[in-house]
Image (cartoon, rainbow, N blue to C red; front, top):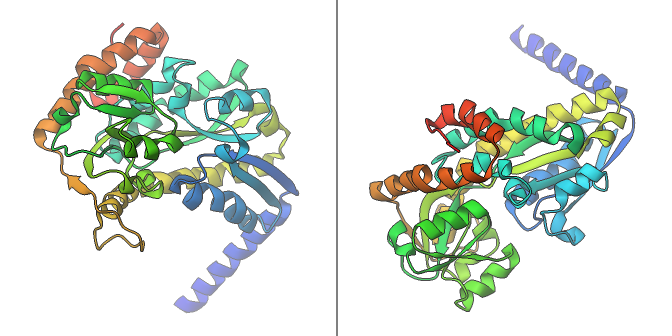
Length: 348
C-alpha cells in the first residue's frame, strides 16, 4: 500500500511538472555570467542556464550564456549595460560598482562576516535596500545575490598572522579590501584577476586576496607558498535582469525563472562553506582534495589574536571610512538592517 501511494504521488508530481512545463511559452534568453574560469560560473551558472532551465521547462525555456570576460568585458560596466538593456540578464561582483556608489560595499566590508552564515544573514537583510536602489530609474531588477568562497590571503612569502602583512604589497579587488590592507601597514595594489599569477611570480606583489577555491582554479598555488585561512569577506555577486526585458516575459516564465534562480542562490550559499574548505584542501595538497592536481601551500590557521584584530579594524577603520562616503540614508539603512545582524553601528 505504501509503495502504491508513493508511486501515485510521484506520478502526480511528474504529471503536474509536465503540464506546468508545457504551459510555458517558447522563450530564448541571453545571459552574461561571471568569470568563466571560476567555479561559481563553471559549477553553478553555466549548468543552471544550459541544463537545469531547459530540463525543468521540457525545452520550452532555453538560454545562451557566456562569462563577461569571454565577451571582452571588464566587469564594472555590467550593471550599466543591464540598465540600458544592452545586456538582458547579467552577473557581476558588487564590489565592481563601489566607485559608482558606496552602497555597493555595504554587505561585504572586510571583517563584517567571519563565517558564511553571518554573510548570508547580512546579505538577506540588505537585499531589499538593493532592490529599491536598483529598481525605478536604474531599470534593474535583482534576481538574487550569491557568494564566492571566503576571500583569503595567498602569499609568496612566509606569513604566520595578519600582522605579517605589514610592509607587503598586496593585490586587492575592492576599495574596502585596500583600506583593510593599508590599516595593517601593507600597500594595496590594484590588478585584474588574470594579472595576479605573473605579478606574484615576478614579485610585483607579495600577496593577493581572492576566494580560496577561486585561487585554486586559477592555479595561484603555483606561485604562492602560504595561505591564511581567515575569511576577510565573501565578494558577493549580483544576478540581475533589465526591467523592460523582464516585463516582456510571460508571467508564467517570470515565476518559473524566479523560483529556480532562488533555488540556485540557496545552492550557492549552501556550497560556499564547503567550497571554502575545498579550496584550503586543494591548495595545500590535502588527501581530501578530490582533484588530481594539488598545490603544496602551507595552510596558516588564524589565531584568536588574528580574529580579534580583524574585528577591531572593521569597527575602528573600515566601517568609519565607509560611512564617510555613503549617504545619510545609506548609513541609516545599514544600521536598521546589517547593523542589527552583526551588532555594529555606522556613524557619519
